[in-house]
Length: 559
Image 1 (cartoon, one colour):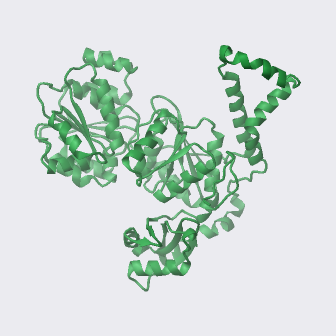
Image 2 (image 1 turned 45 degrees about the vertical axis):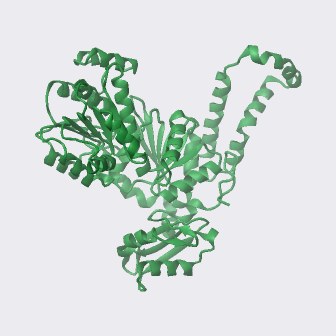
Image 3 (image 1 turned 120 degrees about the horizontal axis):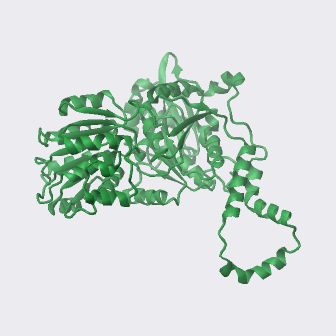
């Protein structure tokens, strides 16, 4: 089936033709005819990047009555980035339709400006749950006449804690509206939402439920925890044209990894919850434009990102929630292109990897961490291709060539080529000349993993608390013990191994008190620093110790 065979208006067909749309994706082919011809609730299960926005957006736009100036279509999305992306897509789809007003409302932007836009009349409102709920409480928007409600990335909304907001918003909408729920996974909470608010929904599944897209290849490298960062650099070096996202588990780790990559000369930036909206927009603009080749992000910060043509997703740590892996890997391999999801794991994460395999119904391929010889070969031939394909503006360069020929005349062609290649390539040859093997030697694994296998102490379950005060602030182990005891209010608090590094420290504490302790630490200031504390089982300080110069020719220590 083609789009022109679906019954869409001429105006919409012209708009999507401009966008290069001809053949619908599987989710579009199944959803659009139902919405155009029936009033029916739909549960759509499909991965990120499968064209869900057009699936619900095109038929919903067709039904907008521009003579009525109130919200008729409400779309809820989990993040402001996805909210803005959906808005841009709908504007593109409806550009030949006169009079349609689309308003985006989301947190992190002035609410008064958004209220002003709503006052002017809106047919379609695209919103994050928190902001639209705020507007409802202020009585700045009336949802009583909404005839179509879309919950996009519904599983993400619930994971981010928007359940109460979603319930309150749905209560303000008519009972007889059409409800469309789109999700990558079918969790128990999604099933509850469907049962509570939907009427005999038809379920449309593209692929298997919770399965990963076939266009993504899943591989993993197994290393010791202390070698995780070194392995990351090798992965990035092995793919010279990489355009991808590196996922970390915590804000602290995201900052540290991004800082290390930048100090090593990699074209990277961090995306995390501590950035202001303007800083976040600046980073994302650079990434979308391709100015950045690597974005280092947490799951929360990256939710809702809609960036095309990503070649790789790199899991610096596996996600705590196995379902989050689907959202990570689904950011590559989109629009019919192939993508690669790389996971860097240690031995303790093998069990979690198997759980993810069961969830996504795909097997991971175990590959060795690229060695120095393989990386140098890749980089060399990329450089040769770049030289071979460089466009020469003969007219502009000709005035300078006589002098260049004179200087280089004594060099044979072979020697000249060697020198040009070496000028760009020597740093990789030097760095990887004696590169060690980072792959885990299974014969010596027990001895290698002993320092990192500590989960129990005196029969108690222990959690590792990571916080942002290190040796740079002169902290001592005694001060850390005093800080933990004072913050918890428990002199009998069980404390285990303590590690202090340049900018961070970690301490093992009794798991039953860890969550409250972390919450209380995050309200404290210590040694003149606002404390940021997080739970992290996998962090080891060796991940962030000072190192020698990297292949890009810059130091990556934090001194």
